[in-house]
Image 1 (cartoon, one colour):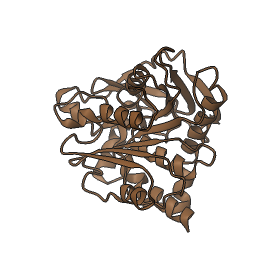
Image 2 (cartoon, helix red, strand yellow):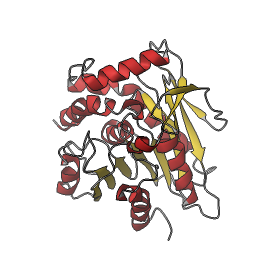
Image 3 (cartoon, rainbow, N blue to C red):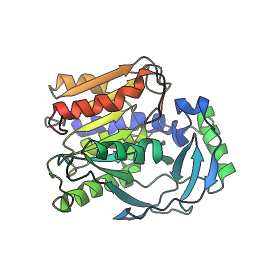
Length: 313
């Protein structure tokens, strides 16, 4: 029963997070260029292949574009993990897997990936950006833009999958997350990390992956998790559920006016949970600087990590 309930959560939300594809709802876009401009793939010399294999049946190759002043990856077929290690003098021994969002169609690599990891490393937390495998999109940029517009219009909206089919759709991403945790723990001594203090933070679709990894990731077992503007539908909370941090804007067009059952479930299970519901911020605020108080989510998150002993004062 519990497993079915967990899978139902995934099936309920798998399309909702897809609506955030390509950062199309990033609120700071009002002040920045929202055009998708193709760019060459940036150098990623520190990226480590996770060994989960190529995405089955993939025909389109990895491509990158710039939008809202940030870089996005799509058609990722081989998962990687990029370490951002703190100065040894600052290192706390804690680590975080960072899962960017983008509706499982793109990854917001700057705003929800590398920028987050750099800020965490500056606070003494080893951060690892997970470039997980994505659903295939048209290789041609114009065709990709059309497919995104169709998704937002509802013309391409797929039927809601059954629970079993939903978890199968996320199987590659969950496998990538599990491999990330395994790699970090296998090299914990080298990276000066406590293998029992490895958590995960995700944004939008990455938040969904974070929750799915917690519920169905078997040996991943994150020490703490953060859901940043991801779905908050109810789940059956495991008895050993890790501490949960949630940040969401009330005006988020995807999840701001929906149920907050995820938070309620953690509380009912008497598991640690902190919930920040910001008045404004929209969806996709990430590390963008804004005039809204949602910009304070990162400081709140690191204060929360400090309260739980993962970050020093």
